[in-house]
Image (cartoon, rainbow, N blue to C red; front, top):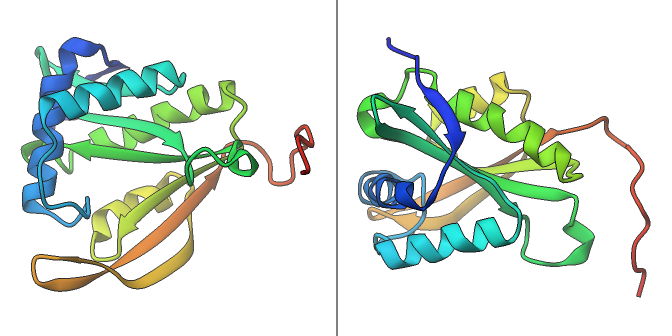
Length: 180
């Protein structure tokens, strides 16, 4: 089990590899509840939007090849009441899974999220993805919701698990913000 790889911020030259990984995950799994692979143009727009919002996209790289990627973004859109929470995603090339790349990518998101003042990181995980559920639990995520039959793909209903991890201590004070 080879685990050595570099984790680094992605740049625009990585988007084609990110797109290929994303498309393979869509085609072969229920990790993403989508049917159509994203185009390079769509993934580039996603990448540019993440950068513009100040959100990090990371890649795992070995011998010049991108093995996986992870990122986080707003949770539940741009509603200001959720501004201290982020939702992350992580995907690894099929032949590289089980090598410890996913956990390294997710763990590398914690410090940048804290630096942005985030309080909670959330992951939405297909309930049948036992490996991802175990990985998240090992990283300190706790299951907080189980949505039954909210997705449908490959001719079957899919359950979605939400897991969350505090990035700082529960109850840590934040500015009150707008109340209207």
